[in-house]
Length: 379
Image (cartoon, rainbow, N blue to C red):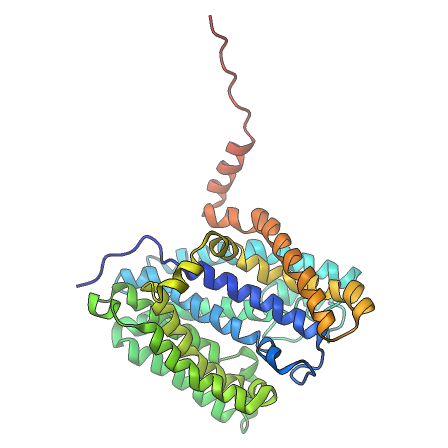
């Protein structure tokens, strides 16, 4: 018998917020310690090299979040067209203004590190979310994953159909098997190697998130499992491998490392969804955690140009590179990017989350701007 649906899965917003904040730290770190993946930073800061894994968290979490409602409904979508409209409504209103913001920064102040000044081709490709299909100068170092996420939305109904007809193991095994085949053939077959630009492992990670969402309809026996320890057990060997092999090997083998990280992230989401461990869930569900999560997408979209501007015009000329530069980057970039993202989200993200159509949004705006009715004078 299915467990009753919860109105809200606590902690997930906090995870989104922490992952987005980690990406800010990662990009600040790369400015202060250039040379990725080989830097001369202190060893204890080495974990900040791996902002890529925050995107892994986003992808697994995306699959999980999108699958919660279908999981409670027999793994069925209400409507594919409705799903597509809702996804477009969710990601495009913040994305396009963030793209414009990034282009203006790149054209007038400084382009992204290692990139040329964006061209008209950049505008078209990034505007249509085709940046991983064709190459062009990037206006924002964080935008690469948005195209991947959008493309996974097209796969989502197929994953649900496969899961519903053949089960979770077959669906996840098929998605992972295809990715493993691509990874094995890519070094030897040029046509297959071309697929690597789409980060195919994210399809398997997304599928893992979908499967993990099944916890919302699992029986009480499964709800009581200590999932956090399974997540810990899955993470330890991967962390050990990364530490032993180092950043050059790790970044050269992201496909395989991501596939190894995915189960740990999916199990962590299952743990949090079942409110385990309680101290972590309480921390994630604090007011600051929920608030950060509410505009984490805007933070992810807008932080990169700000980080580059701060380093290029303030920190770099005064402090160069090294720990002092990194410390100042954190002191400036964390509050500035968070504050900017919060204001940005108030205009371009949060209203579109609260109101699911133009009609609802216009009605809300009209209600806010309407003059109050005059109070009749007392006799």
